[in-house]
Image (tube, rainbow, N blue to C red):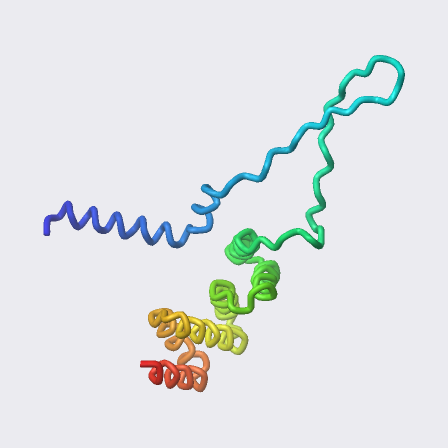
Length: 170
């Protein structure tokens, strides 16, 4: 294989990894923008000739109870808080996602990573175990094995039980 081919392969592999890591930001580039604000023409109720005035409709409240939950934005904010070392905001974001979908493998894993980084292995282990179980259900053996390896280090009993479940599925 020529040197140039190797360079091209490594560049493509690097782009693929970068694209995977930055997938939320890349997908946001292609997301449809919300509808632009509509200008409303209002007139004064009087007998004299009216001069139109341009006014903007009031913005909808951001904390409206019936506003739809936006998982992507919540996950992005949680990740930004995590990398900005705002653990409380990151935890709140991940827990908000898990309140909507307790099976969200991304939120489970990233919340586990946060606890792992803090040294709170007792809180990280059950999250990693859930990620591994979900990965096994979805047929993602690679993710399940990586979770087993981490669990065997931080919670050997859980790691051993998970390894047994993994072996039983083969």
